[in-house]
Image (cartoon, rainbow, N blue to C red; front, top):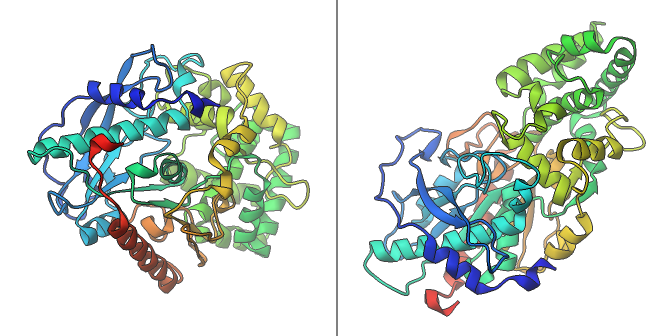
Amino acid sequence: MMGSRVRIVFLLLAFLFARAAEPIAAAAPAGSRHLTKDERWMNQRLDHFSPTDHRQFKQRYFEFLDYHRAPGGPVFLRICGESACDGIPNDYLAVLAKKFGAAVVTPEHRYYGKSSPFKQLTTENLRFLSSKQALFDLAVFRQYYQESLNARYNRSGFDNPWFVIGVSYSGALNAWFRLKFPHLTCGSLASSGVVLAVYNYTDFDKQVGESAGPECKAVLQEITELVDEQLRLESHSVKALFGAQTLKNDGDFLFFLADAAATTFQYGNPDALCPPLIKAKKNRKNLVEAYAQFVKDYYIKKMETPPSSYDREYLKETTPHDSSSRLWWFQVCSEVAYFQVAPKNDSVRSARINTRYHLDLCRHVFGEGVYPDVFMTNLYYGGTRIAASKIVFTNGSQDPWRHASKQKSSKDMPSYIMKCRNCGHGTDLRGCPQWPFRIEGDASNCSSLAVVNTARERIAKHIDLWLSQCSKPSVGAW
C-alpha cells in the first residue's frame, strides 16, 4: 500500500521549501460572504511519495486572525474541497472562531482554482490528484503555517492547538487527516463527511425519493418516464426544452435532470421543486414543461449550473474554462466512485443512469486504466469503520449524501443527524437552506431551529473538551 512508502522526511523537505508568510491583511467588512479573500501562497511538493521527485507548485491559502487569541490561541484549519477556493466563508465557523479565539486558515485543494501544478489537465498530469496527496499537502501546510506563526511572535518550538473542519468531501478529508495525522490536530468536525467510498450509490436516489415524499416522488417518477419516452422519439426537442441541447449524450442529459431535482433536497430547498410540480399535476399541466421551467429558472439560472458541466465532451477538454468538473470526475473515476445509479426498483432517476453509464463516461473522458478502486480506498481509510478518535460527524436528515457518512456514534466519535425538512448538506455550518449562502450559517429558517442549535451546542462542547485535552509538544518532536 502507498502508506508503507511514506517517510516523514518528505514532509520536512516540502516544508523547508515553503515560502515565508506574507503580512497580515485586513478582514472583510461585517456581513460579507467571506471573512477574507486576501490570497497568500506557499510552495507545495508535487509528489509526497517519491524520494527523488522534488518538483513543486504554488498553493494558495487564506488566513483570518481577527478573532485569534494570540499568541497561544487555537488554529482552525478549514479544509477547502473540490472547487476553487476564493476565500474563507463567513459561515458558522466564524461564530466558532470568535467563541474559541481561533485563527482560521484555509489552503486550496491541489489542482483546483489557482493551485494547479499544470496548465494542461491531461490524464497523465492528473496522476498526482488524490486524497492521499491532499492529506500530505495539509500536513505540510499545517507545519509551515505553525512555523510562520512562531516567526511572527518571535518564538520557536511552540505548537498552537489545531482543529480541522470541513464539509462534504473536505469533511471526509479532515476525518482522514485526524486518522492519519492524529499528532497534528486536536480533533475534527466532519460536516456531511463522505468517508465511505461507494461503487453503486443507490442510496442517493432512494434518499431523494424519501425526502421528496410520496406525492412529489410520484410526480418526479412520472416526469422521468415521460422524458425517457420523448428522448426515444425526438431527443433534440426535449433537450432544447430544458436549455440543454448541447448535451449530445442522452445519459449526460438524464444525469443533469436527476441532479437538478436532487440538489433541492441536498441544499434544503424542497419547496422550490415539489409544490410547483404537485400543483402542475393537479391542474393537469404538461409535467415535462413544468419541470423544464424549474430546471431553467432554478438550476441553470439561480444556481448557475451550466449544462456543459455534464457534457462528457466538455469534461474531456484538458484546458476547460471551469476545471472543477473535470477534476472532481477524475477523483470520482479513480478513487471514490459515488456512482449515483438508479436502484433496480422504484427509482426517481432514469434507469439509464446505471453503472455502465458511469464507467463509459470515465473511460471516454480519461481513457483506459482509470478505475475507482473503492475496496482499496475503504481499506486504506476504514470507511464508516474509521479507527480514529475525536471526530464529530454531523449530517442533515434530507441530504442524499448522508448515507456515505458515519451516521452512528462510536467511542470518541459522536455522530449527530439534524432532523428537519430542510436540513441538508452541511446544515451545522451553513444553516437553512444550505444554498444560497447564509451569513454566519443563519439557521433561523430551519424548520426545526432547536434541532440545529442543539447540534451546534454539542459540537462546541466537543471542540472545547478536545482542545483542553490537546497536548502541545514542540514542533521538532513529531
